[in-house]
Structures are given as structure tokens and as C-alpha cells.
Length: 327
Image 1 (cartoon, rainbow, N blue to C red):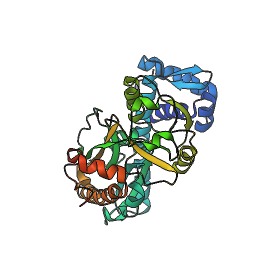
Image 2 (image 1 turned 60 degrees about the vertical axis):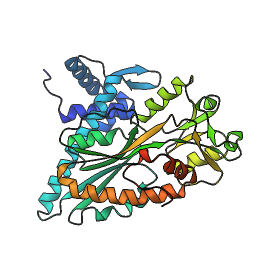
Image 3 (image 1 turned 90 degrees about the vertical axis):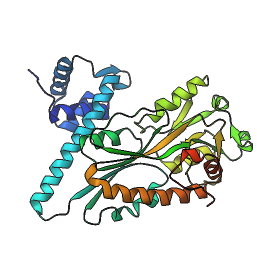
Image 4 (image 1 turned 30 degrees about the vertical axis):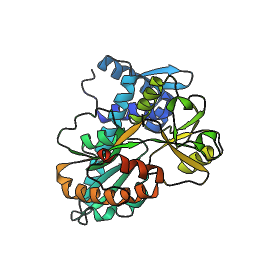
């Protein structure tokens, strides 16, 4: 009888969620397909919930299955990190401790990454970059990360992370809509959200955080759902599609100017996100240094984005701890 979920069960759940197929998961785990199917049935029977459903597109996680898979990835990351750290210590007992930092992909990241080695000179840095902000909090909670820097929607209620410190670096940064410079909408200073109902959108398929649901919820309140026809995780490809006029996309306001792409505010700023720093107590000093680096890099980007720079100075409540852009 199955009593507790062990690492082999978690790896099975994560493999099915990642591959969308029982057979592919079996190959990834070096097991037979019947063995994986039997293990899945036993886990679902023990939990009393269905984790996956079969569909024409493959094996899809249920809402509960998606949550279990996300937690499984975080737990497995912690286990793998522990195994790697122990193996490293056995090879070199005098090795430096690790500082594990997770950062959501964002415009400040390239400049930050050049200076991350200064966070803890007496430690070895490990950097994890995620497209969305979904996994970083879970990895922090599991102990697999020491510091996390990520974004979350302004109306989002984050889970309680026991034993961790949390600081909001930017209370609100408005999402900008990017469009071809030759678009009729680009002639406007702001765009009403409902005006984007009849255009094609580009979206990021790897964002596993709360932003996609938040975006669609806000659009639903405006009377439509985004008509997504293009999916890309590559910023250069995304810019090329938007520059061509085939689609519009949502951009963080610190995004660097792109030739042929116009950034515009959405009237009333209905879409916004917070920038959050979370750390384990033992990483207090390194987190403080990361905060200082972030402030410097972020302000350079604010001053380089005219649309955001003007908004920044008009909304000091959005950044009480940071200066005005024109200073």
C-alpha cells in the first residue's frame, strides 16, 4: 500500500507533466509504459484525485495535477540540489558554500548578471532563470533557493512563505503594449484595453506564474479574451513578429527601445505588477547587496524608457523607496 509520495513518485508526475505523454515519461524514467501507468493509478488512488486526463493533444494535467507537478518540481530541485551539494562536499570538504539565486527573466537581468558575483564573495554563486514567476517562490519555500527576485500581479495574494523575508522593491510597474511603429494605434499616447480585442496577440508559452491568468481576467472584465496566434519565448523573435504588424504583445516597462516597435501605455493602467525580493534569513547580506544592484540597474532602465520615465515621475507612490527618473 502506498503511504507517502517518494522521490520516484514525484519524478513520475513531473515527467508526465513535462512530456505530456505516458510513453515519453516512461522512456525518460527508463521504465516501461505499463509500469508508469500502474504507478500513476496507485498515486491517484492514494491521493483520491485525478492528476491527469487523456485528450487528443496528449496527457494533460488537471488543475490539481498542475499544482502537484509544480510542487514536485520544487521538491525534486531541492533533493537534486542537496545531492549535488553533498557530492561536492565529499569531493572537496573545504569547498565554498553555495549561494543559490533565482531570478525571473526581466529587462534588468542582463546587467544584473554581470555583477552577481559581488553578492557573496565567500560563496559560489548558482543562478537559475525562469520565464515566469511560478517556480521561484516554491523553490524558496522548499529550501532549493536562497534568494529570489520575481514579479507578481498587483492584485495577487502571494502564499505565505514561512521562515522567509519578503520585500516589495517596486509597488507597481504598468504593463506596456508593444505594436508596430506604423500601426494606427501607435499614433496615440494611450490605448484603451478594449481596443486590443480585435488584434492578434503574441504570448509566452513558458510563463507558469500568476500573470497569464491575471491578464486574461483583466481582459475578460474589458469584454474579451486575447486572440493569441503567436507564441514565443525568444525576445528577438517576438520583436520581429510585432515589428511586422502581425501581432501586439505585452512588455515590461523597463524593456529597451526596439527599432520598429512602439511602446504605449494602456489607458488607466489596468495591468500592473510588483517586483519582489524574497530571501532566507541566512542570505540577508547577499539579499541586501542584490537590492542595491537592482536599484541602480532599474533606475538606469527607467531613465532610458521615455514612456515609463514619465509615468514613473507621475506616480511616486509606485516606488516609495526609489528616486524620480529625472534626478
